[in-house]
Length: 450
Ligand code: FES
Ligand code: FE
Image 1 (cartoon, helix red, strand yellow):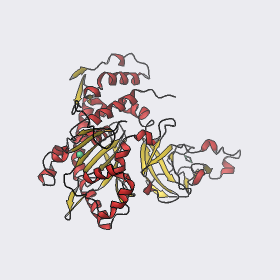
Image 2: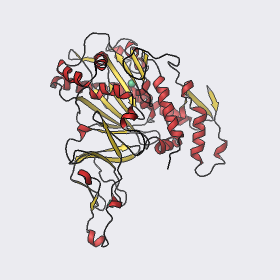
Image 3: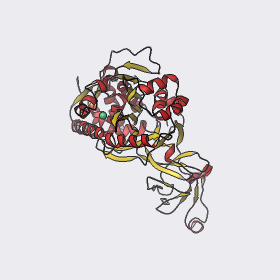
Image 4: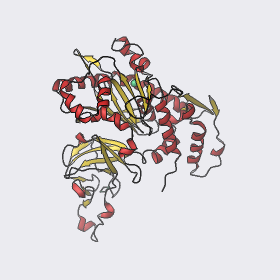
C-alpha cells in the first residue's frame, strides 16, 4: 500500500503549523483498523515533539518498584517522558515524586541515580529541600539566606513541582495529569495479568536496574512487547538451534490478549502438567491469586506484555538450568531520549520469600537471556536499530512507506477464557498492536486542554 505524502501546507503554515501538518499526515496514513502504519512514525522528530506534549504528560509512567525505596530518605531518579524526576520515600512511608529541577535556576537536585538523604541540596547554589514526610519537596533554606534575601523567601512559591503518584502491586507510577483516570482504571483489565507477574507473591528488585542506550525509536520495543510473539522463531532462532525450544511452537502456542487501553500481552503455555515454580511458594501464590489465575500461572511458559505507552513486563521462556526449568522475571521502561534514541531500564525481580536456590537460578536465567549480557536482547536490538535507521532514511521520501499490521485481523476472540479482555487462541496476532497504535494516534491527535 502506497500513498503520496501531501507537503503542500509546509510552505504556507504559521510558526506553529508543524503540529497541524504532522497531525494531518498522521490522520492520512495511520490506519490501525485496516492494519497499516506508516514507517515515519517510528522516528520522525515532529511526531516525537507531539508525543512529548501529548502522550507522556497524559499517561501514567512507571517510575520505581517499592522495594527500591526501602527506608525513609531513600530516593531514585527516573524520567517521565524526557523530564527527570526524583522518586522519594518520606519518614511517613509515603512515596512522592517531584520534578528534579531546582526552583532557583532549574539545576538537577539529584545528580546520582539513587541514594538516601535527609534533604536534597542543589549542587549549584545550595538551595535545600525537605526529603521527609508531609514537608517533602518544601524549600527549607538557602546559603547565607539573611544576607542574600533580607526580605525573605516565599517558601510556598519555591516548592518542588509534584507529580500525582499511585501504586499497583508494588509498581509505583506517576503522572502530571491531575484530572485523568486513577491508576487502577488506567490499567483496567491488564491488572488481572499483571497480578500473575508482580502480584503472585511479595516481589523484590534484585540489585539495581541495568541501563543502556539504544539507537532506536521508543515505540519499537513497546510494540514488540505488546504484540509480537511472531518474531521469536526467526529473530531468536538460536533457541531452536541450541535445542532449547522446538520450532515455531514456542512462539505460537498460547494466547494473544488485547485487554484494552492500548495495553497488550501474549501468554505462552506449556503442555506438561507440572508447575515450574518451587513448592515453597504455592501457598503465597494461592493466597494472592484467584483459582483461575493460579491455573494460568501454572501453565505459563513465557509471558510478555506492555502497559501503554512504554512499560513492559516479561517472564521469559522457562529454560532448563542445572536440571530444572527456570525463568527470570523482569520489567522494562523504554524511556525516550530523542526521536530515535532510548534509555533502556531493566529490572530483575524475584519472589522475596523464595528459597535461595530459586533466586540464584532466576538471576542466572535473567543475565543469560536478557539485559546487557542477554542473548535475546542482542537479537532484538539489531532489529530495532535497523528499523530506526530505515525510518530515518525514509523521512525525506515523497512516498509514504506503509507497514503491514494485519495479522489476526479477522480472528474472533475466545468466549470461554477465564481472564478479561479480548483473548485470541494462539499468539500469532497483532490485534493488541493495532489497539496500541489506535490509542497512540488518539493521544497524539488530541489537543491538550490548557
Ligand atoms: Fe539550585 Fe541555584 S539552581 S540553588
Ligand atoms: Fe524478542
